[in-house]
Length: 154
Image (cartoon, rainbow, N blue to C red; front, side):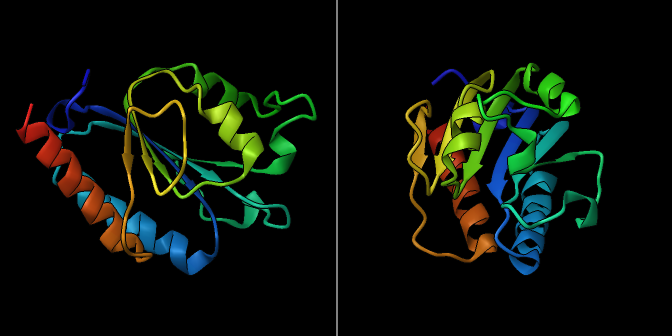
């Protein structure tokens, strides 16, 4: 593998927004994980479904919301801030539970050394992790432990 968990400094996280409670649980679990890592730069892409207004979601400089209106009918981004950020390479991309085809196709080409798919089928991922729980905290902990075990065996 080209990149181990202990050497990740620049991390991109992609996740689907289901509801406010689950989103808050993921954010809290990610905070805990990142506090025990070497990550120095983080970008979170939250894919939101139609009907959710990104202006009404909690704003943060590390988080970008990607909704159906941000992708044109030909699959191009209409949000310039997200489009420019997509060009920056990260050490690792963690994909969590995504099933919406349009954003998956667009985001699956993110420039990265290592792509990790968690609970999602993604052909561009080098690592696939299948959690046995639906609890965000347990999923994130399982992912971190799995990546550390891979790191220890390299």
